[in-house]
Amino acid sequence: MLTRLLVFSRDEAREAKRHEPERLPIDDKEGHYIVRQDDLLGDHRYQVVKLLGQGTFGKVVQATDLHAPIDRSGRRKEVAVKVIRAVQKYRDASKIEIKVLNLLRERDPDNVNKCIHLLDVFDYCNHICIVTELLSLSVFDFLKDNQYSPFPASHIQSFAKQLLSSVAFLHELRLVHTDLKPENILLLDASSHLISTKRGANKSKKVLRCSDIRLIDFGSATFEDEYHASVVSTRHYRAPEIILNMPWSFPCDVWSIGCILVEFFTGEALFQTHENLEHLAMMEAVFGPMPESFARRAARNRAEWFTKNYRLDYPQSSTTRQSRKFVRAMRPLEDIIPQTSIQNARFRDLLSKLLEWEPHKRITVKEALKHSYFTLKIDDEGTIY
Image (cartoon, rainbow, N blue to C red; front, side):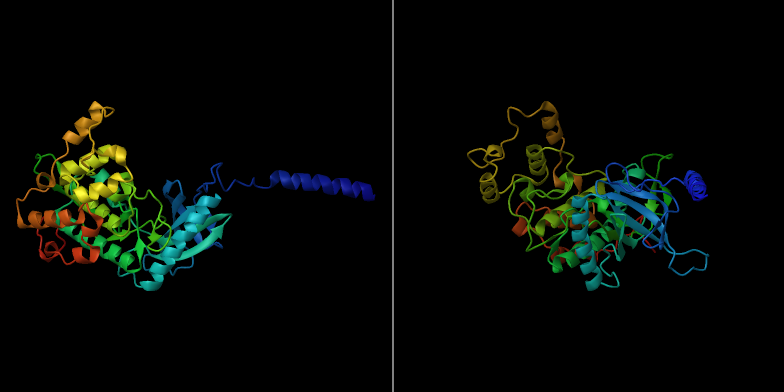
């Protein structure tokens, strides 16, 4: 009797297991979280809505905060959750970012300085999850969706002031962002209206209704007194001292801001290259030859890139025809920002101070905020009334 009961209970167990829902994997083989709508993260607090984006670090999802109060429209607050890959080196890197985000929140609880605001941190199945406010498109994505049309002058001025203010806050905390670029500047609201352009009756472009931004991605942020990696910044926005393997600090952020502002004016990245010597040659084409004192110091690390007279040795025998063509196509800053108005003249003057070869001569972000460019009232199709 006992044996029969035992056999029956085993059959029952087998049958129950057969009807159990199959457990779906949490990660893919690279350690990325597999996004599924309605997944519950963080002790069932955050309900996944959709994937927003992904990178080598992991994925960012939009989620509903189920602990948030219901608003008048019957909805709860939505947030962004950065789900870090379940790989130790990415977990370690995220802990540095969390340290920075905690400091920013502690020093600026009301987020006056417009850096991404940390809301929560938790661990989910070996994934560190960083919860922040939900923002809109990056400035880069808006540019791309707008056929790389330049921003209106009033929006460039607004972006410049906000970006300089955010970075001034970081620098006061002795932090260097090191990865400033349009992809890391997010719009608070990407809603826009269409206007016709001068290019033709059937041509139009989108103009933002709101120019408020937030600075994001503090994964590479470095404290001034901590170890400095030899190569930082995304290529197009990399300062000359980094390319030349020289010491770097706060001025490398200033250079990146200069490159970003030129891109807002033209619609395209200023230095579209992936090769060091070509990059430096492009810089010389835009800003003139590097000062001899700077070249002498640079030549200690990169002698092969300089002549005996401390001139940049470009082109070299190995330089491709395509590279020479790219460098020849570069225009001086005076041509990129023509002095057709007082606002252009002041904007160009600010850029020349942000994009100074010598890091110690480069204007600081705090000084830049006092530049006469910011005293101008700019009326154009982007002005917000």
